[in-house]
Image (cartoon, rainbow, N blue to C red):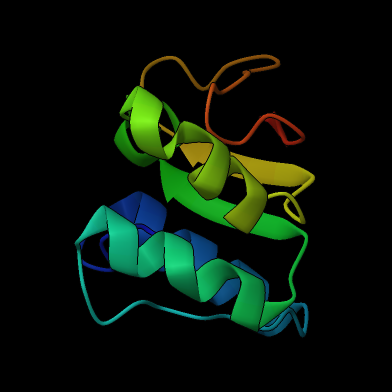
Length: 98
C-alpha cells in the first residue's frame, strides 16, 4: 500500500483491507526503489497506491529489473483523478488498475 493514511483515500483503503482480512503492508519509506524492493517479500497480488506511484516513469536502465520485482501484482486500486475505469501502467505491466 503506497497511499498517505492522512488522506481520505489512504484511510478508507486501509480500513477496507483490514476489515476484509487483507494483509496490509505500509512501507516505511517514500523512496520508490525501497518500496519496489519490498513488493516481492510481501508475496501479494494486490496493490493499493496513488496514481503518481502507479504511473511513475521508470528509467530505461532499471525498467526490466523493477518490472520483474512487481510481476506478482495483478490487481491495483489506484486513487486519483484518472482512476475511473481500467488503468494500465508501464511499471506494473501485469496489473489491471481500477
